Amino acid sequence: MKKYLLVLIWLGGGMLKAQTNCNIYTDKPHQVACQYYTDAIQYAQGSKNSQQLFIYSLQACANFGPTLCEMSVPYLKRGDFYTWKILMDKAVQADPAEYLSVRGWCYFKFLKDYKNCYADLYRLYKLTKGLPGYTGDGDYDLRMVMAMAQRELGNNKLALHYFNECIGDHERKKVLGLYDYLHRGVTLLKMKRYAAALADLKLEVNKYPKLADAHYYIGLTYLAMHNKINAAKSLKYARELYLETGYHHADPYKEEPEQVYLSDITEALAKAES
Image (cartoon, rainbow, N blue to C red; front, side, top):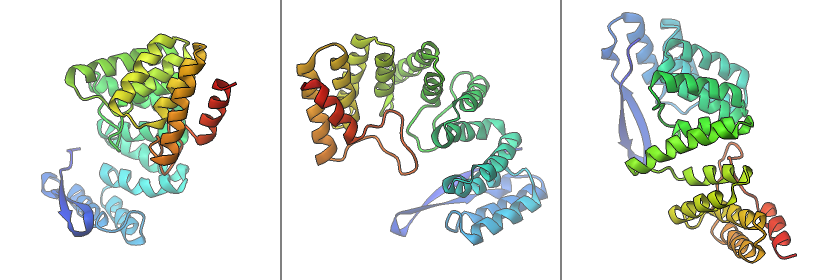
């Protein structure tokens, strides 16, 4: 099936809506499905009007990937993972190169299904010759997600391989992700490679100076190195940032990897000051 073309249009009130060029499809079922899809995305996501138009779209062409993917999103956000997976599996079957990234990222982000996340992203990694692209929110190169999935599966060595590959590539291209050094640094901390962990975490705060989570993990690293003075200094600053600026890793839908809470900082600081 051919790819669909989206053109983003800036509308008043800060909204972005998309128009789809349905003329790129050469067969009638795809053209009709595409038109219903285009109409559906003009309504609020998950609304009755939107979902009904998606149903019409799939009646015209049952394997129209854009509709299957977009129709699945409200179910995912509502926690109806069963219905989401039915639709997403069909989208992946229709166009693996387009939707493996979506399903793999959602496995990681919402379901904590690290095994299937890695399976999807590794398949995409092979299809794209090692350049699987980015998550839908743009926060992560998918190689970073592969690394974190392997870490959660207990495979720190393989995780570090993907971290190093991805970060090395980013450094050469000067396109470092916002949390690249944070995640590799925490992984190195878990591996008890404290000097390397500290180096990465310091690179993270150079990039994002007010990220409370990074200062917290620097504090933990110093604690592991039996340097309580520097540990307390970092943890106090982490607490200050958390309370006064609110700069910490968070997401409206789920707990983020390496996300820190005020209680974590308070507990670690008590150990540093004991």
